[in-house]
Every structure is written in C-alpha cells, then in structure tokens.
Image (cartoon, rainbow, N blue to C red; front, side):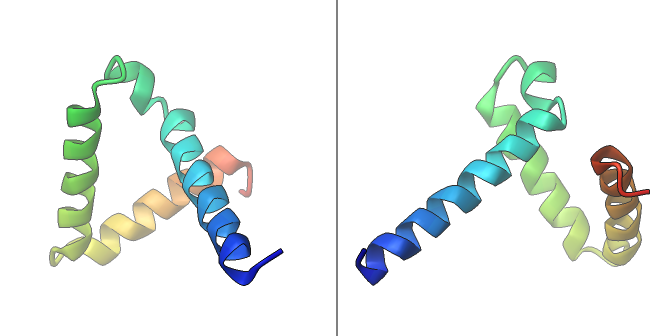
Length: 72
C-alpha cells in the first residue's frame, strides 16, 4: 500500500474515533444531533482550555474521562 494511503487510513481512523467520543459522551442525543450546538460547545471547550483556568478544566475533564473509560 502506498504511503499516502496508509496516512489517509490513519487519519480516517483517528477522525472516526474522535466522533465516537462525541457520541459516547451523550452530546449527540442531548442536542438532537444539532451540529451547530455541538460545534458551539466544542468551541466553548477550546476557549476554556485557552483561558487562565485551562489547566484546572483539563484536570477535571481528564478525571471524568478516566472514570467513563473505567480507568479509575
């Protein structure tokens, strides 16, 4: 397989996994699959991570994620 095809498959798999996280979080159902709301929420998260409170938010969210993945 050509290198570009391998890279494309890796990127596709990565994107699918990220979309799976959005579904697993319940956001899709809670927003009735409203993509403008989902995008707005993701932008809000990115803004929060860029803020002075970003490290604290990252720690809190990482802990919640670990619990959901059953890593704690």
